[in-house]
Length: 611
Image (cartoon, rainbow, N blue to C red; front, side):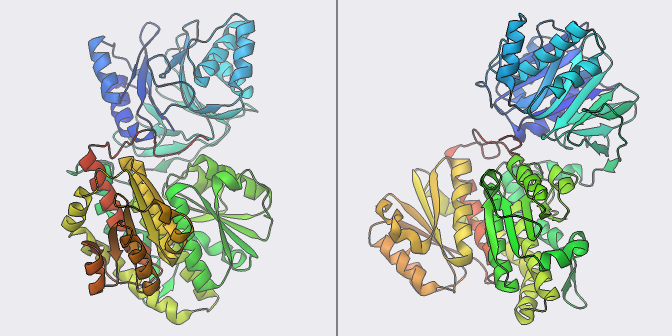
């Protein structure tokens, strides 16, 4: 989950690397480092943010260079400190390396190195890899490229790496297996990064490295080879489609706030060109060739992690209601390890904002090995999941920088509705209901905007609960996943313990927690209103503080609670999108009022690319 930048060209590499690491800081922000070619390899590392690294380099009069690598870390092996920060050097000082991923057999490699007199200084698995490269290079008297390749053949685990060698100062070597790496192709320059955000300032031409590939480049040329067979492979040059403005704050205090307010646009983009207005049909070109297999499958499984899992749960409700097909929703982290009944008659929908989520990617590979058809629902074009799945649909939400997902979630739910409608239309099922849903989908961006243009009330509610230690979120039916998502948003960015439950389950345990200090958020809709009203009264009778998010405007709700937030009415399949947005705003304002780092919450990173 770390961020990597490498540069070779005619510019000042330090400037390119610092700018790139700043853009990548959402991937990890507990330490950072830079290494450059300058009469050998010079480097500076520091615990803290990229800004701390820049200050340290200024204090040390760090040399300018045209070849360098940088890293911003999310710690796995070893605490965040200067010693464990990347880059890591081998003991000879000839090699320096940055790494995203986990080397699973690092202990056995460390023992091998120790037997040969090479001791590691840090606690990291990464240092073991660079020491192994140096050991092989010095022992076998082979080239820089061949030493890296030979070491990687011995490695078990996931990695995205970039390596420098002082003996070949005008060359960079990079490799990928399980962790993303992208090559930016410029004029007499190349930029290697964990994603495209550090590249867009300099070029829009990019190449995605695939698993098991090694990249070798100097200022003028590059080559990509298969690691195992050492055979050169041809690569397609792609183009970055988004604009630079989309990865800037654009006057907002935080990326999360910007992305919350972008949801009318991101939802509209998710639907653009997919609802054919003349006949009300849904068109999803990415599914066209496999639609027959999807509709004739015996089993659908949706797999995802975190927020994407919550979107998948809503999607399962919509598919079951409109298409009358059974759907299971699995955490990818569990699906990949347990025995599952999966075969050629199974379709796996995999949901991921980044398209790089390690557990989801592993679940896809497992499903494919068992003969299942895999369908990707991702945001990031060209991502690993997009390339690994048999077919899929992009959500087109645009870049999402804030660690706590907002617009990606609502776009995922939008796209899952489009998929369910398409399936229902092809099966000629629930056509009247589907027509109603399509009409409301077209009104959705406007209704989201209604909520976002009047957030003062939600901000006032947030002020009352900044000192709360616990929250409970309750919803029924389609609103149960919303309760889960609301609780997740709050705990992610404010560090307040929060749990989401089906409202009917409250009496099966959580009601024991209710007292005068417990805020309880109820998501109230017309369907099941009397039942959830009863749940609310059970909480108020025990002194609980009730916050109501509702699309069903009844006077008695205002009598029960002084904290009532109204959202517009809309079809129940997409109502979770509207009820989620006040919960995003509530979490944001509580966290902001507490002084929390909203965009970079502690211990979290945006893309979970390691187990």
